[in-house]
Length: 127
Image 1 (cartoon, rainbow, N blue to C red):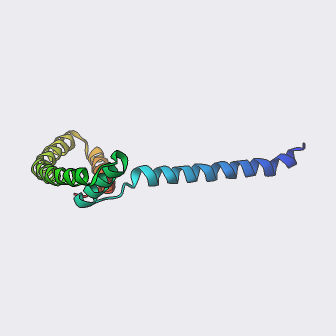
Image 2 (image 1 turned 180 degrees about the horizontal axis):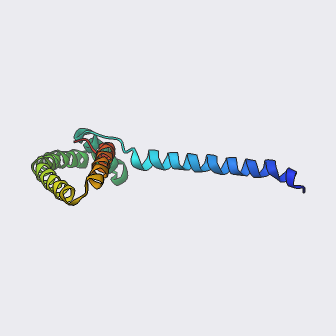
């Protein structure tokens, strides 16, 4: 084949590669980084449904598991509410201490990084 005959084949291969890469990246982003946010009630319902389907729970077992999930979910939410402010305090102290040792230029970049992390965090969990 001549060099000119390879040009359309090469162009098609490059385009196919780029489209595949773009589609793959989009799927990874969609599947792994855009985690849907569910309320505690929705999470509990999804978990119960999974237990029912995968464990083949009887009606009595389903009722008992639901009761367990209700009481334990309430306790876990109370613990989260108690501990979250302590984590925030430690995180704030850490940011302040790091910021104190940075130059002015580094501090600007550090603050930009913090904003990026906060924006990304909102995709993972509501605060």
